Length: 473
Image (cartoon, rainbow, N blue to C red):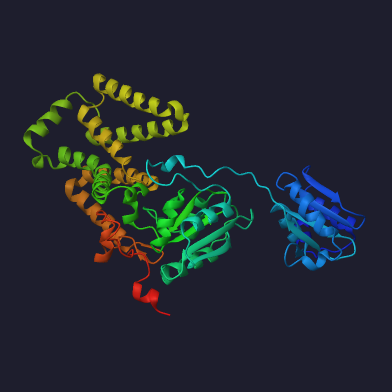
């Protein structure tokens, strides 16, 4: 409590008293160094995050100048309170305390741990830029500027967390971004005050707090995806300490696209997007349709198909709906086990475990072969969906659909799909309808949804500000 009171107090007193108080506020850490430049000047900095070479070559020579206090507007900035001094030290600055001058001065001298901008392992592509964001905010902003060298690029800083002091960046192209989207993003950032943000993904729950079945904020670790999003009229959010960029808005059409779509012919990209849409529908519906066709709507099943399933289920003691639900849960447990194991053999153990368990259960008569095939197809189809968050949502939605199909057959399944469609039609992502450009229909936007036109014929994105409004003064 005393520390909180002192952080707002003016940085006054003798040089020794101010140094002692700053040391106390930081808890006397072993990496805090007090460099005595002279009898009247002391420089404080944290050796773990500050380059001592910068202090020796730039800060101390600047202090040796007779009029160093006059250089505060170019190199040294003034500090008025103990809280300002503490935040400067934690930000990697060197803090200068002068005995005959009230307050203090801060000089940039940070040297944070960093890594090379290598390609992210989760978004590897065979063609295209092989660069990824890293955990440094200034480096990530530089990567964005490298790909979008446009005078309309706007960069706004914001505080991503209150307690940890994480800084963030909001980037967009003026004239392309919709004023509605930009206004809602700014309002969401003003409302959200997360105490700790260690990754940009944690910011999503604060700027889009309403629970959504499907993601309304996209994410990527690839600068080329961020470049394309900005050119579409979307807003980019970056935070310090995170290699993830948030893309706003995110609608359903964005869930089918991947970066590689724009590095291959339009026909191939369209074919692959069609496969992704089919995979999305298969992973969502195949288990529920199988349950409905074999338990409730048997008259709609072809006779050979129904007889084959009935013969395979002879002697199986578990009801069909319990068999499907149990297999779905078993597959999810195997999936989670594979994620927790080391990557070198996690996938192998998951595949072998699923094959051994499935084959043994069939031979023992606990499960039927058609049910195992249906769940396996559903499992494989979930990996076709590019967005991991969407794939998880689809896996969760499978269970209520299976129960509805078991209780009411195809009639109940259709009603559930209608409710889901109504929900998606009413959802919005920062002012943009979630099913745009299909609902409401905007023919211009259909050029880059499931069907991808050639790059030479693509026009302004449906997310971007209308051309007439963008050109207006």
